[in-house]
Image (cartoon, rainbow over all chains, first blue to last red; front, side, top):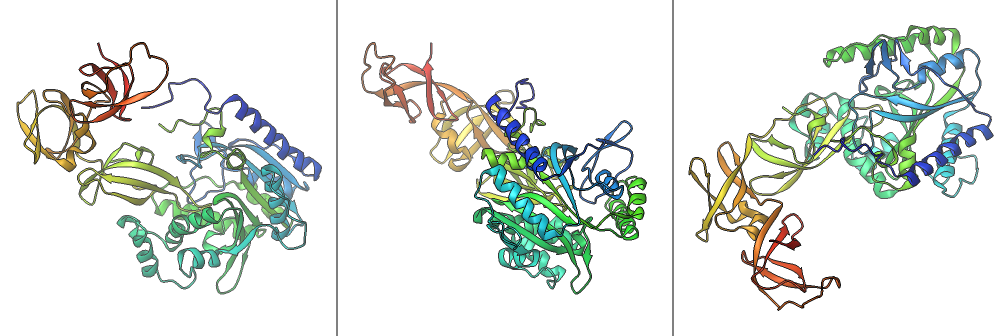
Length: 325
Length: 186
């Protein structure tokens, strides 16, 4: 039975007051550290296309899936450290950890390394969850486990992501209950399957903060790629109690490579029967003008609140989530 | 065909040429990666539960099942016989197929029978049934507040906990989902 006939909020008033406190604490964290809050448009005429993310169409364009391109325009124009906390939208993402409209926190640190940013992310999470603070040593994020993507895949899924053949990956996926229609999947999709099926449950069982870093170049998105064999994306994901909470990059600064990556995504989208999306030309102009060296990260605020409130879904911390039906 | 947003608890799907009911569904998506829908499904024929995972862009076939109201006739010990009151056509189900509904089967009453490709595969009792108490300790007059209960055996053989004031021979309303006493029936 659909529950959307009920007009009342899903989260109780005490929960919503707690949510407000947590949002205020996040803003206080950045105020204290001199990171300036910015606001960029929710309604966009053009985007940075992603293969596995579909924007929600809105009369004049698209609702933003992330504020990344607009915030990078600010950085290229000389803004210092900036953050934004606001709504983002992604079509068809509905589940315990997904709502098509959600609150995203994104921030950029010009001149910072990825390791420095990881430490700040760990500090924010500890502040919000009231966990003991990392001791402030110089290693990235003490009090948390740090694994490379390859280590996590080897340890939890028993697979070497660089050397395994497509056949071996398919066999592993099939043994894990993947439907036969997974046959046509690309290498990275098979690895994604093993990540959600084997690595995430293992991280959940382990609990605490776990950083995964050094992702395959095919999963670089907007991160810098370190050439080599294998080429590694300077990207991290933070898992807290097995929930993927943050995704950060040493930001790609090469405008031409950025253009090529976005065009490649559009080609892949078309191959998969999706529509190509208008590429944000102003963002590419800003990249040509020059993005300062910087590290940036996005945090799912609803998931952070879910962890703080120890609820089973992000919806329980929202006044009016999309009805799950 | 069902899209990933329609793969919800209670949806019935056909996988590996067999009918299943979804007992749990989860949308999972690693960071920038491919989204998947994990479903836990219970086989409508033998009751086994397995997990399957689909790419969220895929569709899953709807199971060719219909629910139809039928009258319970009798059991010969091996099969439980039901009749479609419209066509008077009869179907027989095994002990396993009748499943949990067994506790609530009363002759002449209507139950929901699930047909898969025209064959009966499962039975479900209505959420509330009215049954007569076949056996229980005598009632304690006036005790309507203490909350204490006693076991009562119903005419179908099922045992439910009832309040102390309820008597043998009385008709009570029972919630078949929880197996709990609701109230005395008029």
